Amino acid sequence: MVDELRVDAWFGDLKVGEVRCMAEKAYVYGEVMQVVATDFSVWDTCVLYRARWSVECTFASLKVRGFDLERTGITRPDRLERLFGLVVLAWISCLRVGVWLQAQVPVKVKAHGRPAMSLVRYGAERLCHALRWNLPELPALIRLLSTPFHAPGAA
Image 1 (cartoon, one colour):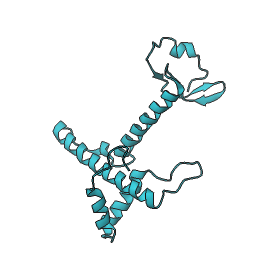
Image 2 (cartoon, rainbow, N blue to C red):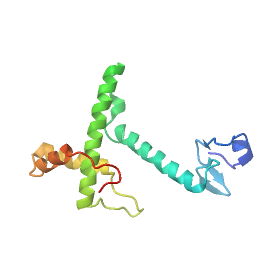
Image 3 (spheres, rainbow, N blue to C red):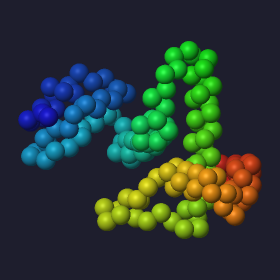
Image 4 (tube, rainbow, N blue to C red):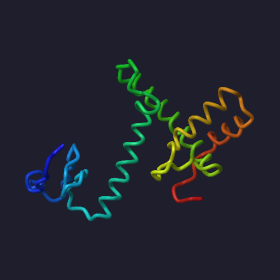
């Protein structure tokens, strides 16, 4: 944790088009904050950060907070590639089911305003439950997973 932020010391050497984010939070005018310096507009920075956050959440759900991909003992690149492909297919399937479920019964929102679980986890729990107990909804889930995705922007 940095005691006090001196902007010129941390960001003074940035060139146009470069972005730098401090690895740790810092005190800025007495408040703890994450600091990003960029020459992008505030709106563009928010859009980029939202896209980055989406990627971070995706990797987190593939790793320790989800499919636990990191625990594999596989080191051969060809086998890792196949494993990664299968895990991504499973992740997409869980997301597809989660999005479908969200349209029917939305995930509860906690007091802090965030959902109680991700759409991937929501779909994974329902899919695993249906597969394990051979629930009547299993054929509908299989039909859903065999239906192609809509084109971007299409209903």
